[in-house]
Length: 187
Image (tube, rainbow, N blue to C red):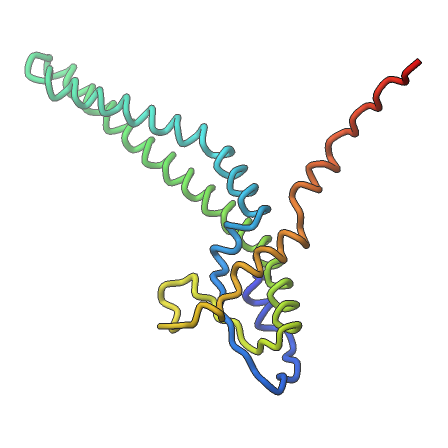
């Protein structure tokens, strides 16, 4: 279940006497929290090698296209036709591999957004309950119907801080690292 669907299925609590509305840029909150930054860096590292290889293949293809353009008139018809077929086949392969790379990136980004978003929604709900907020509007989409808001209603920074407190990244890294050896005893 996506974090948005989860938020919509939560039973409403009785509104406080002074109802408040807040806004959040959930996309920015996910990307700016420590866990989001770490996950984005890992995601980038995961796909950088494939992306660089694709860029190199594309540069090599462009060099072959340039070679064909410059020397095509002096080549035999058979050699020119073979080079054109090879270039077309490589271009199609690069396009397919690029589409596959983009699909893999999109899939991993969606999973990341949903995983972090689910945890982020718990923080938003707790924060809202503690602060008498009855509605939180997400303004991360430019098509959001919010056309103006006072900066005091933006809870994005507060949610990022609370998320980082609830889901610390450094503590997880320290727990995975072995404890340092004790200093040698003095004689």
